[in-house]
Image (cartoon, rainbow, N blue to C red):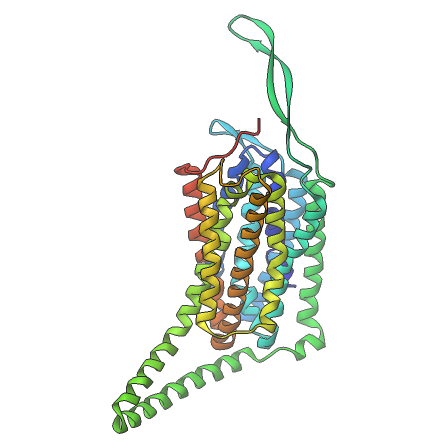
Length: 435
């Protein structure tokens, strides 16, 4: 079921090594896609407004919205398979209008899934959260595997092309010879790839139906309202007990009282810190790093870009599943993972700034380096995000997952805006002419 939350957009990202060769935006295509995704962040706001204006039954609303998200994603995948390469002349240049329109709609429904799918999972036992997150990231693994099989068709080959051009001033034709790249097609087309994603979306719709209406799955559900009420009562009781204990300890020993005050403040800050972790990781993982990755890796070659992007999508679900074995509730450990991933992100930003001639470009060592950097960054971000959302589910219930959904969109939105400004407004990154 959770495959449907992001697999369509994962598919779009997996196809980037091919799309940047065929669509007129070139290396700037990921940043343009990202900005449409940022605009699509109105999706969660629209859902929140509906929830406030028409409160009704939250479970019914969530179920209906999830069906809408899955079905809309499936239809859009079919439309992408038909019209992904259609362009129009706007603002003095060819633009991928059809592609961006459909990416916007995919982003709209997928962004909304963050504030619907996670609260829906609060109906189930907390032990299912790693599986849900792994399934969500599994969309990247499946699309990445299919993308690796598809390939990118090899590096463009520059050849002399002679065209007959009409001179309007002299009223005559003349031959113009230019160097143009000849692209080798992949093993199967972009259209076939999006049809494959349509089939996956249909399977997700079936899975969601089974989750809602089969007896076995209903047995694995918890009473969300009761669980949340119990959680709030426990929090109140803990708070009262802490105050009583604090007063007793202060009366007996001022030093022990100080320690209790410090512990209480740490407990109070724990939830907002987890929310911040989730937003901060999303800022880089789905925002800034995604926007500049093409400039960081493409100077080393299309094959390296293909390998880095698609291996990263493969590693995400493995990192998510590893939290079931390497489980942690330590803020320090999660923060350390984010710092390691941050180091890789800033190094990628440095490589992008050096484009089109970054260090070791054209050398085997450089090719290996950029792939390792991309995979390492994704691994640590994915582990940190999954650990964080699992803790938010355990400690915050439905409320915690709702905050997780909004924070991931807020982080990705800010990161994407910054990436778009750096790439398309300030133009601090330079691409490499293909010929």
